[in-house]
Amino acid sequence: VRMVIDFRLSDLGSEQGIKEFSNDLVIDIAEALFMITHRLKVFSISGERVVATIVVYPPHPDDKDQRSADTLIQELTFQSQDPESALVEDGHVTSRVLQVDGPFRPAEIGLVSGDDDDGSVDSGSNSKDDDSEEDDDGHTGGGGT
Image (cartoon, rainbow, N blue to C red; front, side):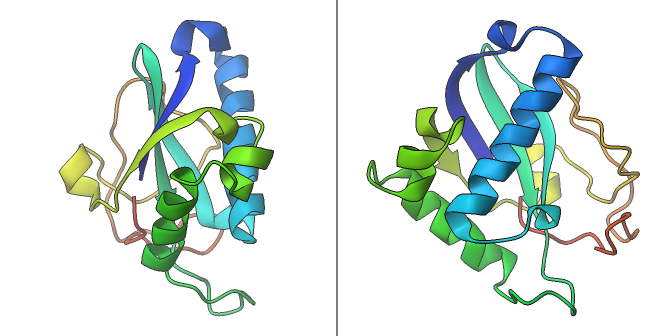
């Protein structure tokens, strides 16, 4: 998923500011969709106006919530268009969402999914490893982006 948010990259400041913004974004989305945060990962933050590229992972077999990545992306898109939704009305970061596009396959937006999941956020380059590797949370590639 790509989200355009009414923030300027320069407003986020340092690498730490970008990490905090990314963390707040994941929390906002998870709370609005009533889901656990480990199914979300911000792959990149870029652009003059912030464009966040986010992967929604498929559910782990042990997860209580078994909604598909595509279902969650549809709900995210729907909520982004509703000014009274939890995403827009209650979100710290997502209250300023301007647009949500997706789902995309990783290759469609310049990502090659997989994960070395070091917790870092790419603030410009959009590259990751092979799509079949498992990340630290037990997810394999193939999530919706």
